[in-house]
Image (cartoon, rainbow, N blue to C red; front, side):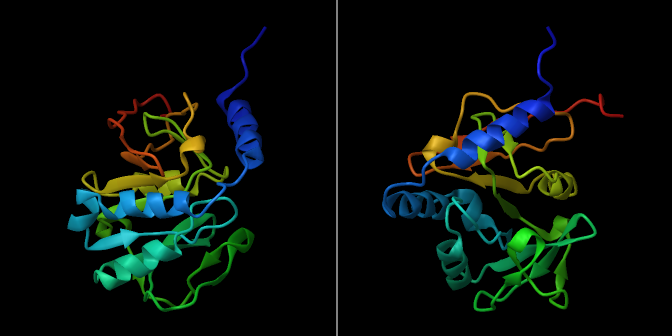
Length: 198
């Protein structure tokens, strides 16, 4: 009997993740924010890529305000032609509904290249302790992180219940360096990918 492919396993995990109940209080979101803002990697970052949260994701509006007060330059993604384009966004600027209804910058906002980003804050439905993640299935963030500087930090945000034992990873998947939850900060070792996709 053949084992299910990584793609099938990821689809099943997405269904499970969407069935998870939301946190019972705002305390969990506040704890994620506190853990994130306490990261030394964030203290050193001058340009940060952030995203607008949707659904059961950890709210990112408080992160946006806090980083704006610190004088951090913020870049938000916009989907264009199947890729993520980063735009520099003023903390007070309103985002507009875009791809799949996700708030994103307007097309005319100034762009930022991935190599200008010091720290990426990355969404995910599920993570494991090695930094592997299950996203929404478009591969947008994997392609974006492939273009990042090697020294740029990649940080996943989620609630503790979204950390599972193992996430299937393909050679094109890009793991995060840290997973920040309401209970802890998980420091994952960088996973070296081989050339098996080539």
